[in-house]
Image (cartoon, rainbow, N blue to C red; front, side):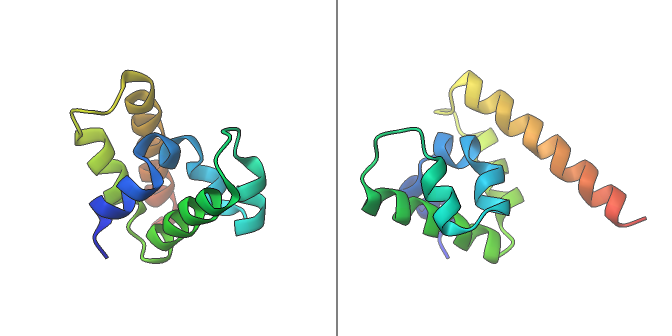
Length: 96
């Protein structure tokens, strides 16, 4: 999987905004949670690609790519770093 291309398909800010939905909810529930006026086809595509990142266990790599991107806006960057901190804390806790 080309993770950078996959993130472009989803939209980096969309991946971050709906990160926990993509991680924990069903596809149908994710689609229902979108606030933007994306078409149903776009919602399904974005959700499917995001789920693929999680299924391949590449979500931390995706977050790192977003954090490293010069094009990431400040709000998205702050949320990305917050999620990374939470995810890393969860990993450390689960290894105990």
